[in-house]
Length: 542
Ligand code: AMP
Image 1 (tube, helix red, strand yellow):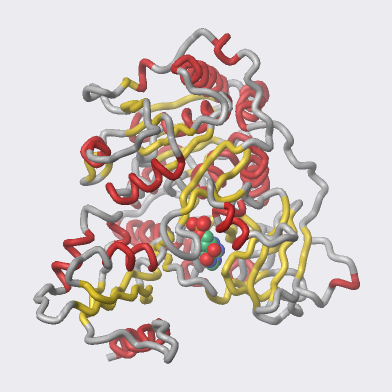
Image 2 (spheres, rainbow, N blue to C red):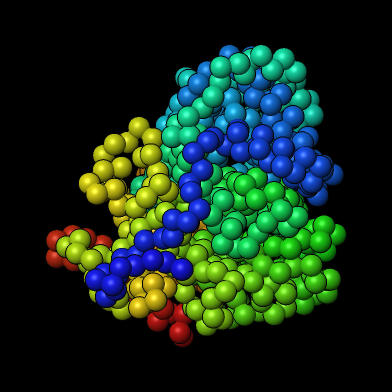
């Protein structure tokens, strides 16, 4: 699949095929083209809302919403945030903001006040479209105390908008002249997504139409998704996995987006696959593990399934095999990537041998180059471990308003440095072997230890803290904090957790808190997180 010249064979670098040209139009245009090609095919089915839209209807709704956004006074390049669980309106907004030349800013549904204030002000959003809440979070109450000077419009996705909010249902305009002259360039930013990156607070990854539309199209193609296929989407829309690898893959290929529930729900996902005769299903390993155990409790007819994508974190071989077998997903592929690269850089293909499909993250994607480098930036030989880097159309426009962080992540040659350790074999298949960066991945959610550490330092009785990820059967990793408290302090682990609860997204609240007298340090005063990891592993072994 991947092409290499003979001379480069032994070096761990590889360039993707270039036989299908890149898409050079915008996402709004892609929706219009889908409506022309497949006017009466299902574009979107939202099971929990009872909504079903054909590509023709989707296109009409997108145009009216885009016109309404312009009529409201939003101009090219303005940021529009969305804070809502999976629903049809979320996706209408994704496409409508693109058609209207706006930048769609996607918020994690689990955010609390501290994170919300940061992402609203970092992105400078002029409008937010939000649901009443999700799980136990009351979104209006979280937003109420926040100082966000640039935020002018609050739009409500629920029934009766609170005072100060506009109703989402009032937004669309049938006067499409509001869109006259609006033709976003494919290289313009269309989306800001937040990622913990390697350190610190969430950074805004700025992505263009060209970045994500091409990646979505290529990921869908390699997963074998085409017109008439139906993709079950249990993954969150605010992440690339949902909005690019699912939504944009479907728009580009004429497949149907099937939403089982507002948030991940194993039973609802299986019910949606059965009722909607889905051909593909996506998920992070944790989700597939939950779906497999739900299947053990209640059998389902999943015969319509043929493939899908597992990604987001290391995909265990055994889970892959069970998904192929028990869920009939014989063509399932593994994708690897990061938000900063739109996201996918490598993916397996249904034609690859089984062993390769369960043990590697596949080969380089079309129109992309990848290489594996050592600590000096030299490309290593195939078979040798190093850091994986990606170059090409998929590399982000940059971190929003943060040129320094961008310069640290993307080198002068245009390669995005992933912080992931990888090995490339002779045939160009890549294995992810570890992480050079400090990041924790819990159930597919990336967590920066630094962010939790900084939050805990705000506690008057905490003098020192270090956060690591420890292995966990269900989530892959969970958050563990070692805390040194002030002399005479009586706070305990539960109180420390309570201090985080309601302030940080639930998945960042440390599952394990250890009170210690001091942190393991190097002579130069650096915390030795590996010592903490060893101690936790020894404890686990006991
Ligand atoms: P995100 O920006 O949230 O998409 O997270 C990107 C990170 O997730 C990568 O840098 C990897 O550390 C990890 N990741 C994503 N996909 C895989 C995979 N298939 N195997 C191993 N790690 C992965």
